[in-house]
Structure formats: C-alpha cells, structure tokens
Picture (cartoon, rainbow, N blue to C red):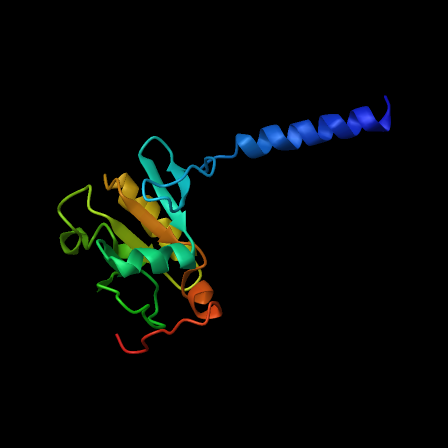
Amino acid sequence: MSRGWVFSLFVLGALVLAACAPGRSSSAPAAEGSGRVVKVGSAGTYRDITVPELQKMLENKDFVFINVHIPFEGNIPGTDLSIPYNQIQQQADRLPQDKNAKIVVYCRSGSMSAIAARTLVQMGYTNVYNLSGGMIAWTQAGLPLETTP
C-alpha cells in the first residue's frame, strides 16, 4: 500500500467518525440565526450559543435566563433565576410551564449548563440555549458580572 492511499483511508475514517459522533449534529442555524444544534438522543435538541449571539439576544430579551452554576460565582446581567444544574428537575416549579418557552442557561465554563440544557430537553422543553464557554467566555470578552446573587 502506498502512503498516500493509507493517509486517504485515515482521513476518510476520521471524517466518518466525526460525522457519527454521538450528541452533536452539524452546525445548523437556529431559527433566529444563532446557535449550533446539539442533539439529545431522541428527546430533541438544544443550541450552543456564543457570547456575541447572547449579547444580540439580550438586546430584545424574550427568554428566561438561568444561572445553573454552583457554587455562586456571579451572574451575567439580566439573569432571571439561579437553579443549580443538578436540581433542574427538582425545581421544575420555578421553570416556565410552557414547554416551548425560550430558556437560556449558563454556568462558569459551560459544562454544568450543558448538563442542565440536556435535562431541560429531556423534560420536554423545545427552545433551549446554552452559553458555550459560560461566564469565563463572557468575562474574557470584557463584559461584566454581577457579584451579588
């Protein structure tokens, strides 16, 4: 076998594996033009959004904005609720009753909020967004945090 042929097979295999990776889909645009779609098994999807996408959404805020990070390390201005990521189901009474309501979750780095977003989708919510990079990405963009809960 020639090296070129082996390399081509390797690249093809890597592309197939990347395309078939669980929990993610292609970068389909959100209805509003923001977010990367993340598949949650057969339950549905949520969208990962960037700081600039969140800033644009905050200009005409029409969503419930939830800080799911524990312990408390600050809020992004405009935050409506603080619900620990691992208590989303237990505190469902604090969430919108309308399963189509737009909900944006965030945490410090994005990992707790990704868990919360998956949980919300599994609970039947259909319009869920997760701030990719969380408060770290927010502050790296030079944006302020509120330090009192």
